[in-house]
Amino acid sequence: MTEKKLLRVLKGEAVTSPPIWLMRQAGRYLPEYRKIRAEAGSFLDLCYAPKLAAEVTMQPIHRYGFDAAILFSDILVVPHGLGQDVWFVENEGPKLAAIQTAEALGSLDPNKLIDRLAPVYETVGILASTLPRETTLIGFAGAPWTVASYMVEGGSSRDFATAKSWAYRDPEGFGTLMNILVDATARHLCAQIRHGAEVVQIFDSWAGVFSETAFQRWIIEPNKALVARIREQFPNVPIIGFPRGAGIMYSEYVAQTGVTAVSLDTTVPTGWAAKNLQTKMPVQGNLDPLALLVGGDALEIGVRGVMEGLSGGPFIFNLGHGIVKETPPDHVETLVSLVRGGSV
Ligand code: 1CP
Image 1 (cartoon, rainbow, N blue to C red):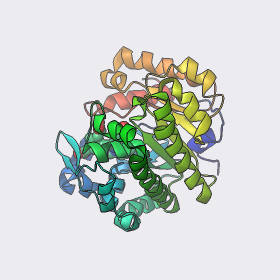
Image 2: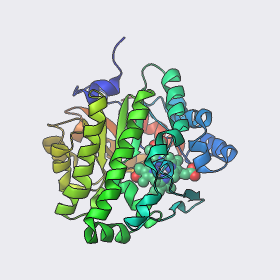
Image 3: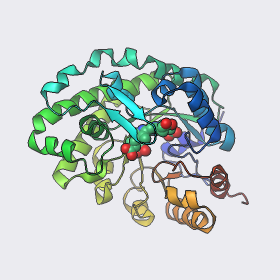
Image 4: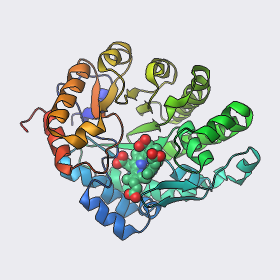
């Protein structure tokens, strides 16, 4: 059997037609997702219902035949598994009982994490045994800073003022939280691999908010420690890193963290990435999700730009961030045929 295309690219091969999957490829833009979601109750209930979570993971594979399926779960199951209260408010997003001092870290219980998240690993197991044989199974987690930002802010944030202030004021106390997250995230990702994930992606969605020295301390170092922990147990499992918004610090992230491949956000110029990043490792990205939402010429121009910029080396086609929920499903169909070189 020939090896799956996505895994070949992650070994450094440049293939003629790139493998494609999309961040947030399962979710609210799909009517069949909204149906299951309504039946499941809350979003977290869906994350912890293995049969339904596996079904939702497979929906975009059935529709579009993507080269990879990404586990349906969320980055916030890790704080939830550590014992923090996490809930999702309809049309607002995640809410957490904020933790803002070193003393409050005592309320977290790292020992129960893997038991609490057992349904997630069960979902991975179902997927591993039912996926089409050309489809790669991707597991994932949030990077320590991105997850910490939700834990400290109590939800989404515009400026991360509370979390950043803690990091600058009390690096030791904030560092304790980051160490807890490096350890918990490593165990969570290793459990996904043990149950059948073939690749893992680490989402550092809010990496782009720090000064140079703080980027080194709160983005590079925790990601590097996390990658090292996974490699101790699984030296050959590819790890994709996504330091969204890192700008020219993408170079340092690629040079220092030990990831196998890097996912580019929409603002990274493809010519610069081809020269400075893709010469060192495979790259993934980076169509603007808004070009996909709009469709038509904007979509064709966007796809052409990404393909021309990145097809000279190992490359996985993706968006620069997650699909927007208003995206018409037939635009995704068009995107897949453009990338695969068919007529539209
Ligand atoms: O009610 C619903 O249906 C909620 C919508 C939703 C979905 C479909 C949320 C809430 N999470 C998810 C799934 C999800 N989240 C996946 C599944 C797999 C797939 O890609 O198909 C993944 C990989 C994530 C990762 C995730 N969750 C990230 C990192 C990637 C990114 O988009 O930057 C982040 C930051 C979250 C937090 C989160 N989860 C959900 C919301 C609304 C948010 C907040 C986003 C924000 O603060 O802007």
